[in-house]
Image (tube, rainbow, N blue to C red; front, side, top):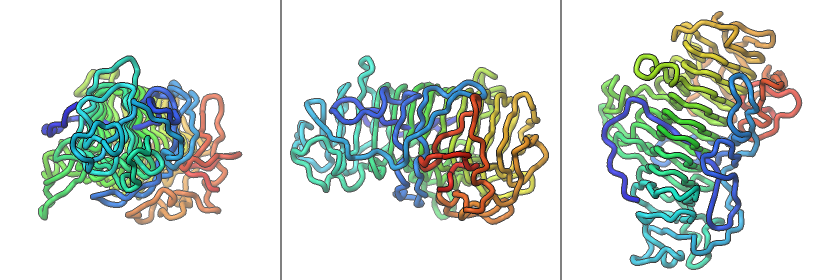
Length: 517
């Protein structure tokens, strides 16, 4: 392990990640096997913490935890959901032995890490496989996780709290009532779990131009972290501090990001490239400043901010996320450069599940882009913004096969913008509510078009933007046409059994991400 050097050159395609609840060492509750495993269940995301150094995030209820193994093949497969929001609980009993170690920034020098009284002042350069490291409040340097793998032994990093700190020897509750703040984190070797605990007590702060979190290794779980790009501009609007990308992951597999808040970056919130088996669950992504080379604002590549950008991703599960305030391209963008800059169709995204997400972007032309993708299942999502003529909704572009849209609230669908055409053999959907029809998507028998879907505190398609939305704003009112009008599913269409907040869908489900209770 060693401090992370400054990351200078921006990359053409950034990358992103997610977390799960798997633990080794110290006999605490184990939430599901190998870190980053595609089928691991886990608790929902912690409610939104205030973004340190940036705008305040709306709290995500966490959504359904991803479970049920690999997302099904084109058009079907059980998506699996369950679990509730609220983040990692701190109530599980702990039994620590010599495999537990303790880190406290204000500890006396010369400690051996064996207790809170003799804690290390920072994470040691070398971490032991199968061991757990409890980290108290304080400021810590950037860190690279680069310990060679030993079979599948996991290294676990835990933010210490009053309810979860491993040992009473030398412990004081004041050690765990704030946050542990690190510089950028990088994972270059596999099998790590990093857990910020309830309240997102682990904060990771970006440097100028770099990525706040970089994952270049397999079987990595990151959960309940405040990933702060710390973007800043001068009086002329020029980017002078903070990261280009919140979280990037590339050339890896079995990654899980859960319950994190990713915010205040110049360009993309999350960037995933050449990743297999990824779970992105219960995260909040917001405050992306659209500042880069294209607008002359700063050094980050192009500055076309996307909340989540995917390229050459296979078996991706994006569940219960809240993405808003992207200020540029889209909340979710399927990369479309495989044919022009890559290796063609072999790098299209494949087997992608979008479930119980709220995507809100009234400030951009289109809320999300689906293109260059084989097997996309979008169930019970909200794709919403403000109508801008033929824009403001969902773009479905070229090379999209096996697309299934059910129980979504979608402002509109635009195929022409990126050269797509409706193909009834590959484009399937029903029980969706559209704010407006552009005549480019072929509606099914139970699809409906209405300007106002009846959200609690979000305007109709022809209304005005809400500048500080909260997830609950997208709940349907009692008289909403979304209530009890969705599809319950069948052998091919697996509708989530719980909603964005982890509440059960009972009987005929509501349309959209949130079930009226």
